[in-house]
Image (cartoon, rainbow, N blue to C red; front, side, top):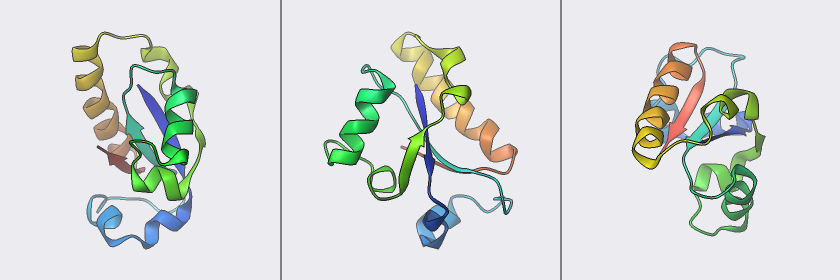
Amino acid sequence: MYVVELSKDVLNEPRFMKANPSYRLGKPCVYVGMTGLSPDERFDKHKAGIKSNRYVRVYGLRLLPALYEVYNPMPYDAAREMEVELAIALREKGYGVWQA
């Protein structure tokens, strides 16, 4: 599991904004994902365009380990559930969140 901080420029993306109607100005924008790789390796692959999410490739700034390290490592099924739960929790805090 990993969380990537996205540039505020992602707020100009209609699909991103539609997915985040409760976004609070000033809160971070993030991408929440899960991987069998290390978060650093996965982030590098996103940025290189390898099985990447467009928002991370274009707007990804850095990993935010403070938001995910407590959950790693985790079995696949638990990670799949936690990815959704973390995305929901961050949205409830006013974050802009994209989760694939």
